[in-house]
Image 1 (tube, rainbow, N blue to C red):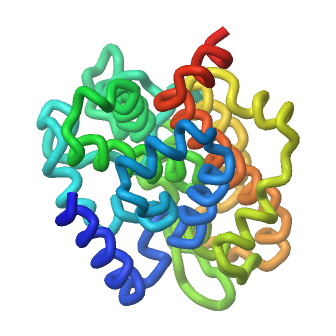
Image 2 (cartoon, rainbow, N blue to C red):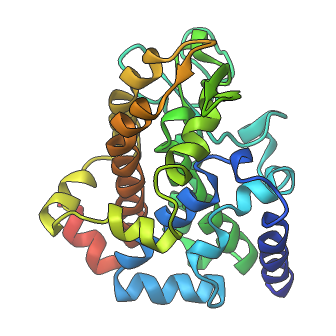
Length: 284
């Protein structure tokens, strides 16, 4: 565990040297999701998380899967990844539902499916006492990152023709970039130039009743909700288009909703895995 902790600190140092636009949601978005989740963990879950992380907050490891992507991929069973690595995006069927497997029914085509990975990591965490510290640490790191990623509008693949997940050129603020980077980075940092804790405070605005409604269903239901909410904006911008300030303003509410929902759902998932009392109450 000391080696893992050292790697976490190293990742934070390296993070200062790497452009934020290289990562899903960017560091600011992932940290805001983790901060919101941290605010909604039960005391029992907080204790379990602190034990596994040895006091390191979720915010500190929210982008670890990007910093050490190849290293993390190498720790997964080969049948999970088949040489492509764990996915940070997910594909949906014609009804916008995420697949529950890693192969498309009927064709056998390999799927990218971070919802599947997050689901299986959560299943492992529910039996965390059966695993060594290093495995529990990795699974918690994965869940924290992937639930954040699955809520980013640029991380949904709508059928085979959208395999690029928005990685086509657009112009924003006079600069050539990609639609994917606009969502991963600019939507958060350009319109909300604050700290991650400020963004978390701005987005974390729901009542307990609203939070319970947001967290209903399975992780696959959450994926469909994301795909439904984000499909319209995905279709609005095509290859070569210019994204202006009005488009950013118009879609800022969606960005806030997705960061907020990701935080609430991450907290709910961890509470379900680590707090038996919470799990009994919310399994009814």
